Length: 311
Picture 1 (spheres, rainbow, N blue to C red):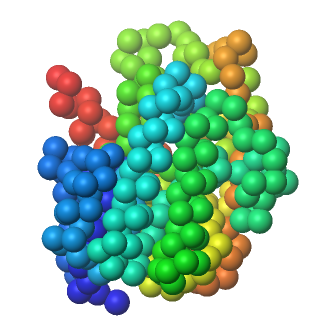
Picture 2 (tube, rainbow, N blue to C red; picture 1 turned 90 degrees about the vertical axis):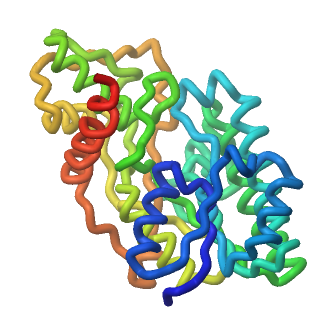
């Protein structure tokens, strides 16, 4: 399917920009609105804009995101901003009679000690990881909002849960970034400064799953076209790597030759987080980009768009 009017909420972010690239390739009419024009936390602004523009569908990638430090330091910002954005967009979509919406969640919605690999049924079966529970609770609320509007009004709103993402347009700010872009920046700067070691938070033991954002974008559009059920659906790479292994891979790609030091006084977060994406794979979607290939591309993007702009 192509030629639809689709609003990508959060089009400037890493996920949103990847979705825009995929949609424009297929000939869809992509609607975008800058936050300076419509503050997604403002209910009236969102409602007015949606009623004026009336897209055929919404791909909901807008969110306040960050790594362990940001989540743990700014809990009120993370829960308030995300709840406000979700409530406004999902309710306003219904009010504007937009029948199709895909909400993007996060694998952090699942319990800290969920059985691995994590199936969709694990939602709300145990306590969350404390360092990012504010963000996780907001994302769970988004899933439930979609289900509620589906149940009460018959809206074809669905939710897709990605694993850890990376790629072009990632956030490389060491204060607010996720682990993979933070490692790319740390190793690049250590290489340039000829630093003898790079310090990494935690033990290096936790296992994580990483999906390139372009693979996710294909998965989201695939779900828009092919998935229409009440239950949220996982979208992950299907393989995992330890934080130590990830750091070694980034070090190799960047060309850093010093030592890795793990600061065990810092939190590890969830010990393991691998999702079961079997339902989506059974429908025909699979990721294409290997981790090392994806990291190499992300590093080149960082050099071209972050480092070059800073000099």
